Length: 388
Image (cartoon, rainbow, N blue to C red; front, side, top):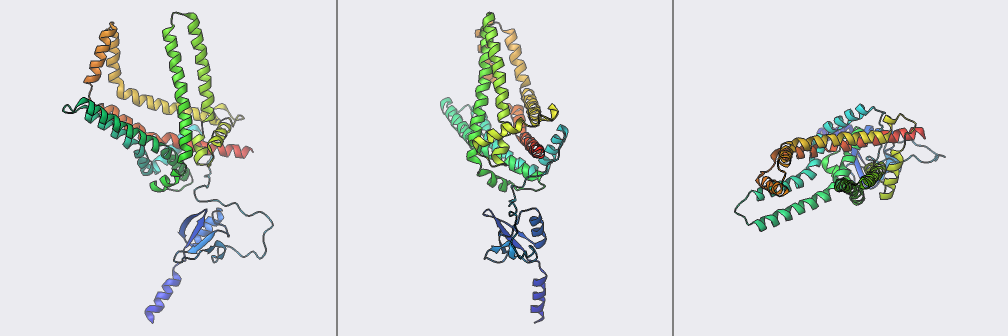
């Protein structure tokens, strides 16, 4: 009897824990104190489904003891807005450009394990393809045709895998950063599970945005070739310069339209067309602010800073090779001899370990750009809503 009585006392002393179901997802177990916090934040409403942790039958959160006070009569106003766990918008204070960079580093460091594992999704296929091509290229006892076919097939498979994983990577960066700004930590697998549902939308937007950027860059190269080929004709030079002005204008206009497409597609759950439209509107907002505080120019600064980092890494890894090529071009006036020497130099090169390592480092640092844009997105949205 004594043991039974002690067991009953212990059972009464243990706080009840509850599971809450919102939009088909279960949250918890949570005790009364945590439920009261969720209630204050608008995460739990009386109409939400709820059950005790050790029970199977679902009731409503209104039946949880001491959570909701009895109202007696229905309220005359509209019901409170339901806010789910992940869709809570973090409050982002207005920061300087340096403050955005500092917050970017803080979120990356605090969630380094998640971002590291996320980067592996992109690094492993790319690195696997490069390493396999290097190892096969260094084997002398394999038939050249077979070696080339194996290397090409494996590289193609890795490219396809990278393209498939890229939308998940983009969406996961948005989700992890949003949770980090809200003071929460989301596990790697939970972030991937959340990001997968955005794959079709992000994939379509990736295809559209990157193809347009590729065409604009190709257009610029075509203009450069036109200038080089018609360097003796003044008319061709003026025509090419005119096309260059048009190309720069088109590039800038498109950059404005897609500045925040990732954030609207994932964090705001907008469709393809709505993401592009809202991105353009937000990028052009803040015209009453000084130019360096507007979303457009801050986004341009972030992209420029990242471009400098990428170019520094690329040039640093290839500096010796570029220097050798430059000396060879300057010292060899005969084009036919130059082609032969360049071909021989290319065949004599070994696997570029330093370039490979720096390219891997770049991919692990790449989430920093996505984090910075999420911070800028929430900050710009907060400024716009305050003005409205």
